[in-house]
Length: 249
Image 1: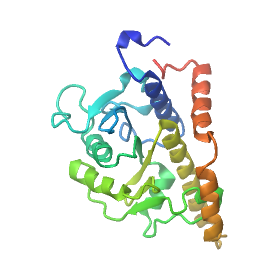
Image 2: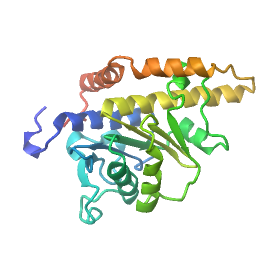
Image 3: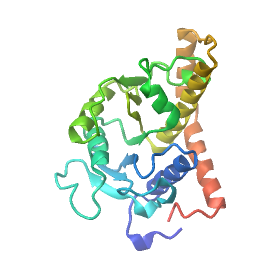
């Protein structure tokens, strides 16, 4: 890979984020040319990498990612301006949630189905669901497109650092994390957990609930499981590399 001609910084982070975009599209978790991922590149998290406005996840390359300053009032001006809702939602998160180094927002099908139910809780019915036991927040106050005011309102819901998934009622999901690998891994497993739950509901049969103490024990064990998120993303990058993908260019 030769990216010197682009005069870019944070090359590995750009490649990781581009791989996450490509795999999200491959799993059909994206929404046309909408939805957004971001990753903070300065100490206080207010400067971040983000996908360009209205570019499909399936063709985003590392060199395509734009740099956005959450404190720049002119961020929405010029040819490289981000999508206004991306600015509102991700700008709010990176200004107000310092532990959110990475943020991923999608309208994936099963998570959005969950977000559309009157009761949007995810009960612990299997190991994947246990991953998120007491580790998500539900936004019950959808207020329209996530422009700046709505984005800041959503960001305030991440006050508890243990809760790194937001089930955005009537909207989708917002996942945060310390690294790109951690956040993407969380996105992947949350969608899998939601799919299991929604398909279980479709059977019409009673659910086999895991007791709260076992669900919490399992969640803690998974919290501390070594290196799984990094290996997950590394394997996806290896697959893309073997296919000759240009994601890292």
